Length: 477
Image (cartoon, rainbow, N blue to C red; front, side, top):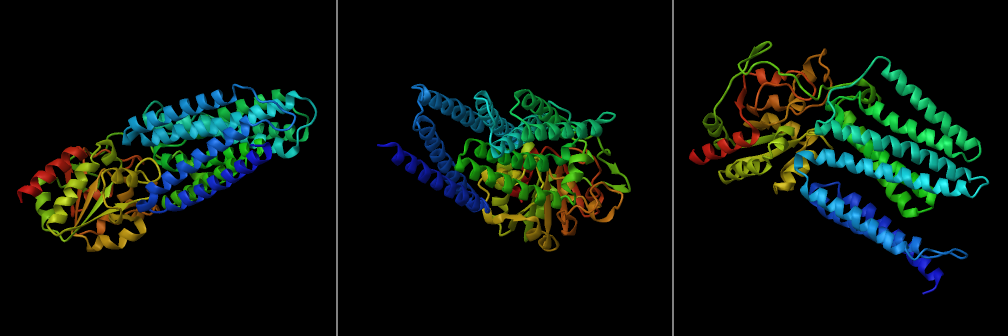
């Protein structure tokens, strides 16, 4: 097969892969089609990787390709694919946000390395480098390095290796601003001047430090938004790398990830009634919440404790029950228990639905993925706008591990740090049951006024144990 035919087939493969990325992304709009969307996108990526390998290993006119090209490509695929498969299979659902952050770091770092290598190779030949290549290189390096170091810090916060609370020091914002200006100054020197690897190395160092100083001051409550933002950065860095090496499928894939991540970040920020800038500089949320009020009393009222038998009677004779899942459900790995309870209630003629808040959990879509793993029917998963009008018609709202997203202070307390944040209208249900281990506040570090509502009964237990008690009690009713 001659070279022109191979090049044509590679370009066709790139177009097919790009189309599959778009189709896959579109199918991820719904939980019912998200799995197939992932598979379509994965197949498109496989096609793109093979096509890129053929492109790299096929000599252009006047060039030679080492006989080690395919073995090196195969080794890279084996190592990367093997590690990805191993980590994805072994990771616990509670650690999925950390894994996503690590994948963001790998993606951003890889994009930066691609841009660095290509720029270094061109600079090694002497002479000038095309302006478009220099601009794409600078953007790819800055965004990729910021994503790499920032994602590592975000993953460390989620894993507990780095304190989840905002970490600041005197003049920290000034230092961050100086780093940003230094990166911009270095970028300007490279763009208007001659190729200079020393300046590029300085930009790399500054961007890596900036990623750390950008994420450290952000509190744990904002980690879902940060993960989404860094995911957008990863895509943008990949697109810049695509411009550097003139690879159309990398440009398209990166642009799709960057745009989708940016849109999701904006939606999540809106769901918290915060601007993205406020999230980046606000230092909101403690991450390591201090103990709140004791289990018997709280500020401005008292807490009513209930038993599993009390709750089972309410659930068994209800007509409509809304389950509100949160991070506590993920920590306890109780998604299968909540599905078992729901099936028991449905067998008794009870309508069961699940209320999903956009920022529940620690990453975008955390609750959707968690419940899908337990084979909860997709139609029962209701987004906030759809489920909120239903709470007033619900006999029981069962809150399992959710905290800040159910706090009525967001509507009524102007001095609360979450004031104005759209929440799930759990307090409008006829009866409210909260399964919680203690009265410790959530990631925002504030007490939840819902727990003092006279309609609220607190079942103090680990989510898994509490749900197991309810399953046994409902069976006995």
